[in-house]
Length: 141
Image (cartoon, rainbow, N blue to C red; front, side, top):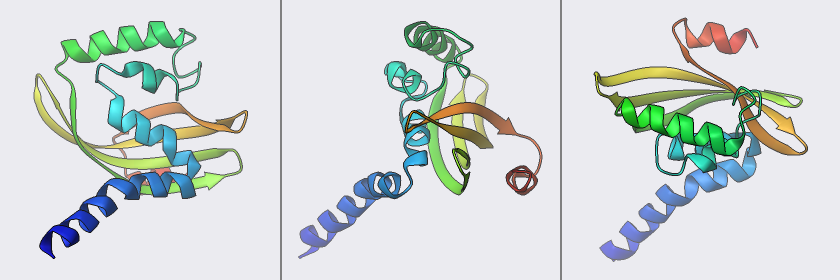
């Protein structure tokens, strides 16, 4: 009985993000970014960000450069929680609370993603770490 309950809880934990992305497709690129940014699979991140985000670099060039940079910094994402999503037409903003580790130590901060719809696909067009109140930032949209 305990094994069945544990299996159900584990299934809910692992399936919930996929179901949330299905209901909110604008979250899919953010979830991919969160999962793969700073890993050996940066190509997955490059595929969900716009050319504008990559400063015009090809996906391959950007993934290689960013991957090396993050590795040199000792970057590792420890935790992430999507806190709020605001969508208007073909643009959305996503607030994520994150904990990351680098060579200089653990950092907890708020991340702000702007997602845009390109040819029926949502992509990240901008990302920033927020110093101001996240409520001010979200409400300015």
